[in-house]
Image (cartoon, rainbow, N blue to C red; front, side):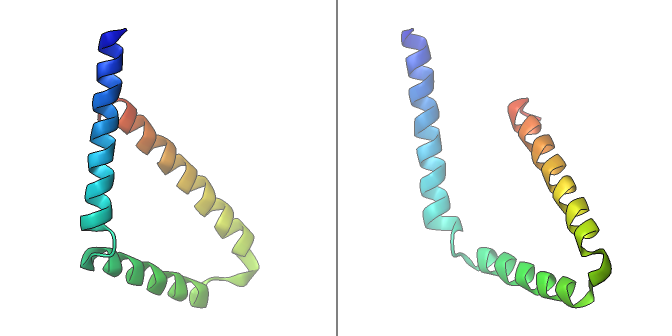
Length: 81
């Protein structure tokens, strides 16, 4: 029981350190702003060029692929791949 408590405490400490690093070094950095601006730009271009007749189908395919990528990412994190 004590070993499990120590492992959980170490896990919480690692998460706190990662959150602190993200909050103070990654969030609102130049790279972060570049990602936000490029994402907004591509979303605007997508909106201008998309075929409005097939919008529901396009969004459905995007949603399904987004969910699949998320599941595979979580599996990779779980198995440390």
